[in-house]
Image (cartoon, rainbow over all chains, first blue to last red; front, side, top):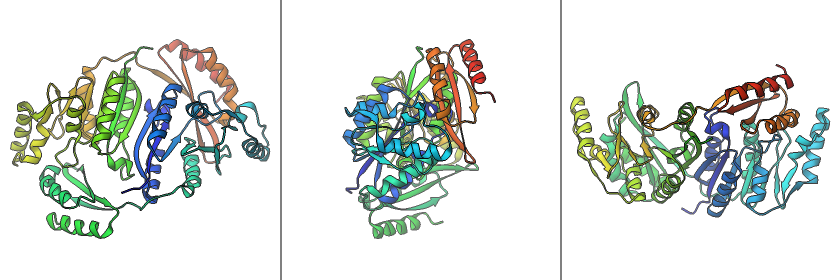
Length: 240
Length: 240
C-alpha cells in the first residue's frame, strides 16, 4: 500500500482541559479514508508556542500531508500562524489578498476592519490561501501543512476546499461483521484468518451491549475480492 | 504552577479510520483536571508496533504520568502489552496473580481459560496490576505509564482505580462568560485583560448559534480570588 500518509495537529487547551470534545478529528478521519489518504497519527497540544512549533516540525518531516485545526482567530490566544511561520523560518505579514477578503466581508457586514480582525490577514510567506465560505478569514497551506480553523463548521468548509488539491490513493474499503461472542472466544480463528490474508487488515473491536459481550470485526484493504472472500469465511465461522 | 504534567496515548486504527469516535480522551481530560494533573498532550497512533513503541518512549521521557488506552484484549491485533515491554526493555510473561484473576472470572462464567484469554495475563516484569471490575482482565502500570483498555466502560473503571494512587496538584479552577459578539469585537479588551492577569489563563472559544457569532471566554487558574476579580472586569466590559 503506497497511499499518502497524513497527520493531524489539534491545537486547543479547551480539549485537553475536558471543556469541549473534539469533532474535527473524526470528520477529517472519515474524509481522508474516503479519498485514500491514510491518517496515521493525531497529536493534540495546548496553546503553547514551544509545543506547537515542535509538533509542526516533527510531523512535517514525517508525513505527506499535515492538517492543523485551531488557533487562527483574532484573539490573543490565537498563535498558530505565528508558530507556523516560526517552525518553517518564514516571515508573517498582512497580505493584500487576505486583507481584501476581510475588508469586503466586513464592509458587507457594516463593521470595521479593526486591528484584531486584521491579525487574521497575517499569512506566512509563500503560503496558498484556503477559502473560508463561512466566516471569510482564510486558512492557508505552507507546503504540505494545511492550517485551518477550529470551529467545526469552518474546519469542514476549509477541508472541502483543500481536499481536491491533494493527491489521494486507492480508497480503503471495509466490511464489518457483528459477532455476539466475547473477543476471547473468537480470537483463535480470527488470528488464523488474519494469517491467511496478509494483504488485509483485520481488526476486532469489542463492545458490551446490555451486559452481553460482542465484537465488530472489520476487514479493510484495497482488494475488494479478497475482502469478500475473507468475509465469507468469517461469516461461516461465526454465523449471524 | 507546578502541577504534574500528563500525556495520553490512544492506540487505535478504528479512530484514525473514522470508524469510531474516541471518548476516553474526553473522560481522562475531565478527571485529570479535577485532581489537578495537567493533561498537556494526546497522541493517537495506529495498531503499529513501531509507532506505539516510539510514542511510549518519547512520552515517558517527557511527562510525569502517561495513560494509554486500547490494544490489551485477547485478539491478534492487541499488541500494546508487547510494545510496552519492548519500549522499556522488560520481559513479558504470564503472571500468576493475573492468571488467577482470569481463572476465577472464567470459572464463575463457566467457560474455559483458553490460550487467547491467557494472553491477557501477560504482564511486563515489575508492573503493578490495575483492577478491572467490569471484565476482569487487568491493566497495569509500568513506572508512570498506566496501560488501560479501550472499551469506555472498562477504561473508566480502570482509571478510577489508578487515580487515587497518583499525586495530584492544586485543582485548576475556571469560570466561563458567554458573550454574544464575534471574537474580533472582543479581542482588544480581552488581550488587555489577559495582560493584567499574567497568572491566569484567559481563553476565547468562538461559536456560531443560529447564525449569530459569539464566544465563551474561559478564565482558568489556581487563585480563586484573582479569577473572581478578572471575571467581574470581564462582565463589566461585556454585560450579559
